[in-house]
Length: 242
Image (cartoon, rainbow, N blue to C red; front, side):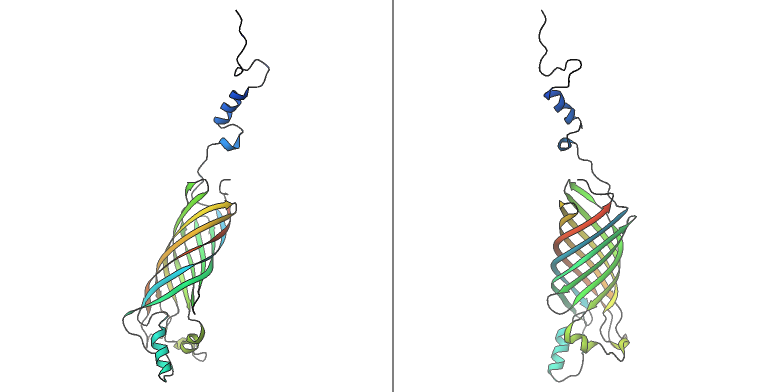
């Protein structure tokens, strides 16, 4: 005897029933929510990103360190007229800071402009060239390790700038404030809504500053590290997945 077709069977000339439509979606059909996620490429042909952030930066510098305040302030309080030559021990610098990073990538190569202003006097500016790589951990989570090399400039701030800098002879400053830096970086980014991300960043590097009067002061060198959090706005091609 003839039986009636089941609800899941489509008769000729009729659209598929609910079950067959669902199977089509599971196979990569038109239902966007069921499409398999395709991991994007690990590099960008073009990217520009702006990242305001707050965090902490710290480091050490040998030979009359970058922010060797103690000897200078003590000398002035005792009636001295200027900075005192540093010893051979390391000097600490840094502290809680705020600032921002501009990231420009063109055909695999990155240029970073990074500024950090300490809540106490002083700050640092870095202009680096290098490479970073994108690792997508999830549809909305990205890990970007990178390395850069370039220029570093230190700002003393306030009265210390007047003590170390002579406008009549700018080359005779007896503390190094500019030089080169190599830095490793690691950024963890969570996409909130394209192009807005929330990010946690860490960095560590080595600086070698050589603009001091070499007849009086040894060059500044040492390691520095820092961490920061902030919101990042990014435009790139190819675009990140939706």
